[in-house]
Length: 576
Image (cartoon, rainbow, N blue to C red):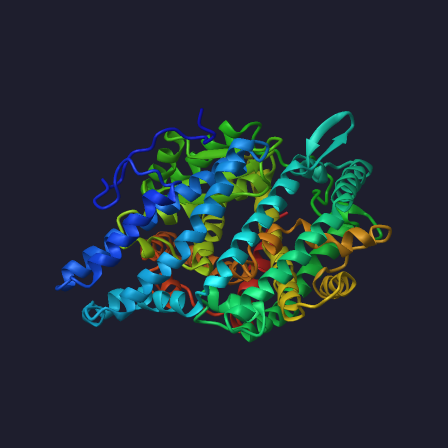
């Protein structure tokens, strides 16, 4: 029985180069295809023949990426399944290490090929740049280190996914416990919050062990590639051609200057409305007027139906895409024991269809998550007919515009889940969340800058660095009695462990999404058309051009942040 939530999926394009019955978990069957590609390269005598060679290489890459995605999906849906774990680890340990040198070899062949310079320059500009980067950074001695990194990440996922508490006689996952932070009973919130914090702290030493090992591994990877530290290596690895670490540090400063005053205003308002002398960590998610928690749906079937109605209202093409996902069971939305934490959208690259994974428990945040991941899914669907596989994905900074803008574009339709007054309240919660996420992004990103530019740090120094950032970006929250939880709060942020330096993208993209939203307030139809137009480009153009096509500026300076912060502040003033 398959551990995947979906069954057989329709073929988008019959395979031309990859054999239909190939076992993509058996390297002895895969290797000859790379050999065949290498052998075919030099005999290419025309641009058309060379482009066909590139498409065949992309077909193989898509098939392999989908195999890896399917195994990752099965593992995250069933972290307690030895079968799913074994299949995933087999791919990580036996297939991916073999792929890296072969992809490097193909990139070398491409870059040295005499026909490369005859390819249409505008069409292949980004592909050319990315292949050159792959060759620049590849080091065979890093392959086993990267495999070890992935295995440590799997162990982190297993630990995080296994954590439960017994609350008032019932076993609950930590995700399920989140809903109690919206309950009006302050004593209940405190009890629930402390129980979760204590459960995480019970594993603090293990989380720190993971981080110790990961920092050491990643620093060695950077040294092997000729970089002084992993931060500088990671910026290059992530293809950050259009901004630098210094730009990110200026972004942190802009958030401190423009967003933190609004965050403190909101915290002061919350404290006054709750009638408490100081905000505690368990006061941050509850409705400040002590109204019952927003309950947008009772089960995930209702969440699916409501989301469909929103997309039906927004745009027929988007609506068809979501309906297809529902029909093909490409959604696994409900939280359950043994399921990895978090949410993601994964593209099945060969069938060219998106899959959404999340942990819904009936919160407003779940509505935001399904809209967010649907934005990613619409991005994948918008590029289905792009034949060059490398262009069916885009830089993360722009991928997150697709998702975050969808949250904002869908916000006028939250009445699908709520009566009018509660819909306004949900919109306010969403906008307050946007204000609050900027400081958290700055904290997580700046922490990673520190981690990897101080690779020999001790655990005590790491805690001190984190606490200094909490002082700068944490706002006015009283952590008295919970100081240890505050010092270890970063343990809950899976990006720090699994996806180093993948977090500032959320802040950059949020600025793009807010610009799409600002545009939609003037001309909704034009803003949505520009949004879809940008998504359809995939990764075929550099970041500034992707933003421009979507009606936005690629800029995350104080000059861009200030008016958008004022727009959010003004909108919040209208909402109760």
